[in-house]
Length: 170
Image (cartoon, rainbow, N blue to C red; front, side, top):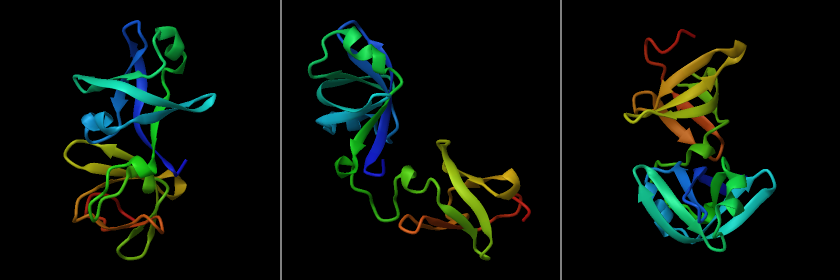
């Protein structure tokens, strides 16, 4: 699945003609307007759909797929993640990375101690927070701020952090 990025989750239908309500997993909900097709990650495997139209309601995207004209044709896939090919992703600036590229990364302190592995990234609004699982099921919450996260290497899946006082006692 490294060739795909999750951009949303199909959370519900909208109307009776088969439109789907999508919760975005992208920084810009309007990103869906730039896409020609997406894939639904269903229990039956990946299904590619061409996008016929997109409109927005609050923080959700309402998408109509080509060939889907009835709620019964799409309702069974509710809860599926919406994926795009990595080649369809927006270009990243220097120092930016996709969250999926650091999940599973080893986290080391600036003194060389292995802290654990990134299991999740919480998006709080102010800054992201890495959820790091350490030995003996210890969990560390590392704020993604320049004074804590010193280096992120997505190729080697390693992150170097500075443990500020109060975050943990190693």
